Length: 168
Image (cartoon, rainbow, N blue to C red; front, side):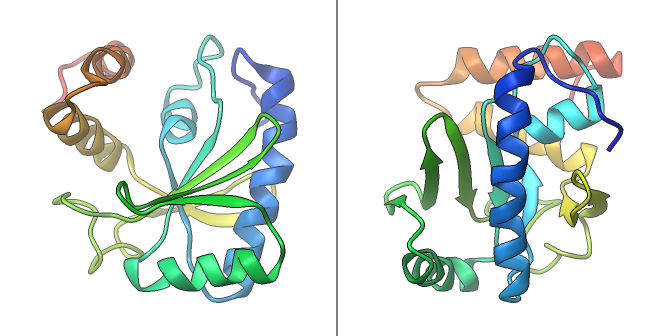
């Protein structure tokens, strides 16, 4: 990706090497991570007024507990939130959040690697969700949400302005 930065450039510049280390570790152990969330939104819109506070990564369900064991072995501090099916790796303000695909038509366990796109994540070859998958994730998250509807709607509206159309 061409070097453009979100509004929180200084945090982002520290976040990238932190996330690259996690992605490399996962890839070295045969676990194919897929980037999604605010970084994917930033990647597609290139909106320098956005903030990217963390890097969100999806892994296949079958690798989830393998990742927990790997993080423990590597002595990487993390928190596992089984009620939400996420792992949060945090080092100060640097955050990488790991979850699994689920409940999406365009992104599921079967098509996880074949439906996502290959990207260069600041000199690390990895995968990221497509724009269509990002749209679907936002719409599903909005419909499922009880607490974050306003936050998700803001993301939807921002993406709609960028696309010049309503999300479907």
